[in-house]
Image 1 (cartoon, each protein chain N blue to C red):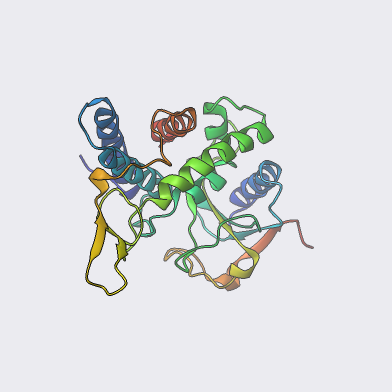
Image 2 (image 1 turned 90 degrees about the horizontal axis):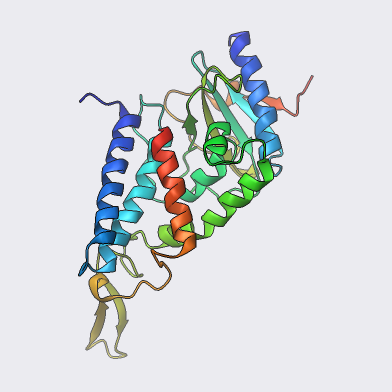
Length: 102
Length: 167
C-alpha cells in the first residue's frame, strides 16, 4: 500500500478515535485508491446480516485526507467474522493502525 | 443522466425527500404515507453512503442509525452542521437524532408484518378460538411515536438535508 495513503489513514484513525472515544482499536484494509478503516467500538450496533457495512466519505483536502475514506464500525466479537465487501482484501491482510503496534 | 451507485441512491433519496415535504404540506393525506416516505429517505441516504459508487450497497433496511455513528467521525459533516472543532457537541447532536432515527427505523415493515408500519396492514389480535382476526390498517393508525412537527424530528430532517447536500 502506498505510503501517502498509509499516512493519511493514520491521521484519519487518530482523528476518528478523538471524535469517538468508545473506539478501542482501528484496523486498515489495504487499497490503492481509498482508505478503508475497520474500527472496533463496543458501543456500536451489531450487524444484522453478517456483512461488514463501511460508510464512504468524500476526500477532505482541507483536513489533510486527500482520499475517499471508508469507515466500518464493528463490535469486538464481529472481528474476522463478518463478510467483507467484494472489492476488499481478506481478513488476513487487515492490519492494526491504532493504537500503533511495533 | 448517467449515475454510479452512490449518486443514484443520492438522487433517489433527494426525490423521495422532496415528495415527503410535499406530503407534509398537503391536507387530507394520511400520516402513514408521510412516514413511509421518511423511512425510505433515511434508508436511501444511508445507502448512498454505503457505496463508493462502484458496488451496489447492501440490502439492509436498518442502516441510518448505524450511519449516525460513522457520521460522527466525519469532519466535513461536523463542519457543515456547525460544530467545527466541537467534537463532543457534535456527538451529542447526533445522539439527539439517534432516538428519532431508531423510532423511524422501527416502523420499517418487517417481513412478517406483525408490527405497526406505514405500508402494510398488520395483525392486531386473533380471538382465542381463531374465529376472528383483527387487522390494523396503516392509513387508519395513529403513529404516535413520530410527530413530524416536533423539534426532534425537525432536527433529524435538517441533518438529512445536510447529508443530501454533501453527497
